[in-house]
Amino acid sequence: MITGLSLSLPSVMQMSRSSACLLYRPSDVTFPILSADSSLINTGGGLAEHVTLTTIHPSIPNMSNPPNSNTACCTIPTVVPKEQYKEKGEYKPYGSFKKVYSVGNPKSGKTIIGVYDIFGYWPQTLQGADILAETLDALVIYPDFLDGQPWDHTDFPPKSHESKKKFQEFLAGVASVTERVKNVGELADQLRADGAKFVGTGAKVVTVAGGTGKTDAVVAIHPAFLDVKDAENLKVPIGLFPSKDEPLDEYEKIIKSISTKPFASKNAYKVYPDMPHGWAAARADLEDPQNKKQYEDVYGTAVTFYKGVIAG
Image 1 (cartoon, rainbow, N blue to C red):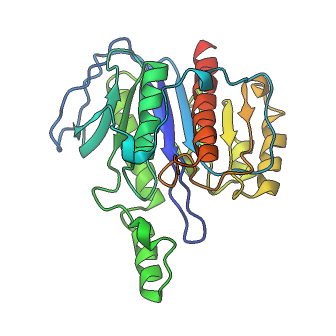
Image 2: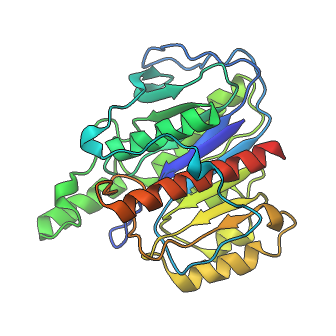
């Protein structure tokens, strides 16, 4: 099964701290350390049975789909502030990537490929990856898509003319959405070459991928670039969990659209009206009781959604 948890890339006006992942479910997955120029991933020849896509983004007015009650939030590992957190995984080369964060069970038959936000690797993001790996008994990998060149969080949003110019160049260069889609596509091709039948991706791409028929589900947490047109093309269930910073009108259009889909009963949606964009990723303040509570809730809700889709 291939699933995704992604931290979305921002635009100059709006930045997404979402997380999107691919969950690969072969019969027997191995996770070798490959050289940076390796073109193959040894998955043991297993076939992907499902693909689930997850993205994490900000909130809008409160609304949820009752059938998808959150039971996992009470069973996920204890969440701690970033200063106290020690990630459970390790960094290693993987496929064509010089570096990925890897955590979880490589023989579970479930692999989540995560896409972080423009700030790169942060304890809050890695803790989310660890939660998914442990709770879903899955292998989770976060490739270093920015190749060691994340945007400096102390310079966001950019204020000076020079900084704004550099940020535009950053978005058009190393953080290009087009390139990220290309990277994920190449990784998906590697998975297919090793037997994967379905592949999913995340962030803005999450809903677009959900319309290709290559994924089994998509999840979006405080997502940027909400667009009802993407939702109209969805062919698989979606978990949508925006923050107060996402456009409510577009969110409501999306909910109306997905409510008419044949898989409507499997959809899950909930607005986090007190949470800012990025509360579940790099900008999460886990020392704040409310942020910590909602961080736990959204990851637990994503796990519950995943389990429901996996169970069929």
